Image 1 (cartoon, rainbow, N blue to C red):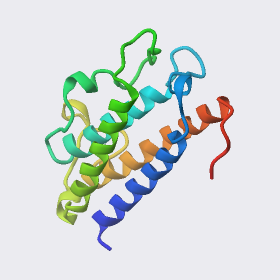
Image 2: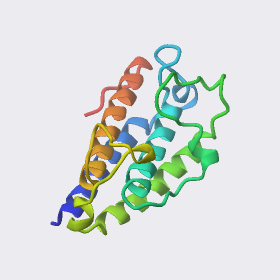
Image 3: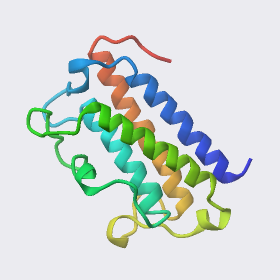
Length: 166
């Protein structure tokens, strides 16, 4: 197994976990936030699609997949607006984008050579990123980032009375 195949396998395994965590969400489960300004499942899923788009396609490959009218709903930093404060895309649209970006990401990552993975990768505006130095690190960070947010989804599930998942 190549390094790229191993990275793709890890990304896909983490996504499988994320999908299990959201599989039984319905109605208000999607909009519930643990406290004002904290992430809700709608935002988290959109944010995961945008993050994968940025970390893999923009930072590593130099071209994005998502249009700005979608990405603008899911910025990093600051409080997360509730669904009553902000008009997010419908959950079905978010989930479709999430699936499309992920499928295209797996193809892209599997096609990355060891030389490409060793190239430097930067954050926004070409500045160094605090979590990675090279494209291998950007892909690995994408996986860690999703696992972190999957933990938030698991917490939201439990607050909503959903069963513990393993």
